[in-house]
Length: 169
Image (cartoon, rainbow, N blue to C red):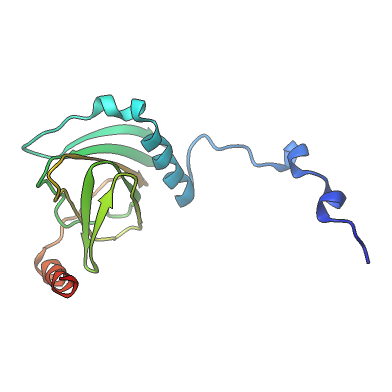
């Protein structure tokens, strides 16, 4: 029986730099976009001074762009919401930076506190609302960059929200 381990045969892969992938300058996979959102969220100095609150409309600011993606910073005062929508051909990562938001979908609603993330594919229909008494801030990464945000009627969605609330009550 051969007692040589793979490491003894191949050697330490970290000692063979030409076999390692070079780090990418920009994210290209869902996991890398999630990582980008987490790294921005962790660096408050990068975004905190930019946040503004507007009682009349959701405030938003494009924080960064790269090849095929955009990063947006949004603030939500109590009661503000996105309306029921999807993101066209874009996938995305939603990260709550401060406060709490509620995401509503046909499957129900979910409270998202600071640090929570949601990843969605093209055509994912949802509504995001600040149901809390304090303002909230969120970060949104869209890939490819957001070019459309079709709105949906709320009639069918509201009926399913009410069913979920009645079952959960």
